[in-house]
Image 1 (cartoon, rainbow, N blue to C red):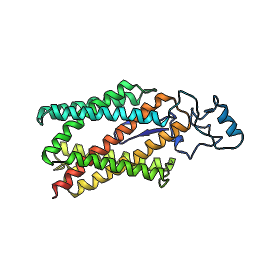
Image 2 (image 1 turned 90 degrees about the vertical axis):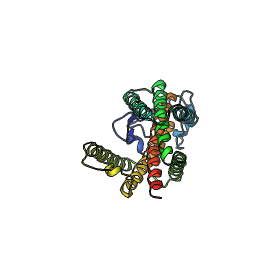
Image 3 (image 1 turned 30 degrees about the vertical axis):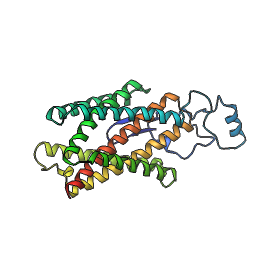
Image 4 (image 1 turned 135 degrees about the vertical axis):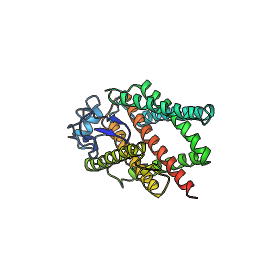
Length: 286
């Protein structure tokens, strides 16, 4: 499958052109549309025996396959790099037009690195960690700027991001959300429409047609748009969770855990930035 978040596209574990990975749990004859599913138990006689006896197939026990521990470790590394970059930028770069320029430059570099990784067939840890580092610088600068005007906003945004991601994981694990092909298509259509509308809004603001940020203003309309953006971030988290679940079940190579970490980091950054704006909007109305 190929999954995306509202900002960047990235390769899914099954690397096909559709959403074959958004099927239900793996079955004995699920070899279609997923290269890892073609014969994931070829090197595991115990798994083959389970399939022959009619038992539900389990994830391959062979070494070199992605595990949840791998995903957690790589995600901790990428998110840790983002955090270190943000802390250093906050501590070393005072709020000024120069630091704002550095933030924009860092965001552009992070975007370029993310796009390069997205079009590569295999994960490149250096690109992923480089993306995380520059993204961290960007977040550190804008967080300091928001904190200068709305004291405590970054801390509240972090708590909000944790709450959204935790609630999304809880809902997903409870089975209240089923990530199917139809679910993914509808969500992606909404996300693409949202990005297009935001791009048009940005152009209108840039040419002076829309005032005070247009749809991204610090008023009630801006708050509604921010909430929609955060909900889209939660939607992409469910796609990330499904990708990870399928990658482990289908016996994806161990290095694919870097892609899982890459996707989770981008989605969490998206949610944090939108949460930061939303907190600022609510604080502005006090």
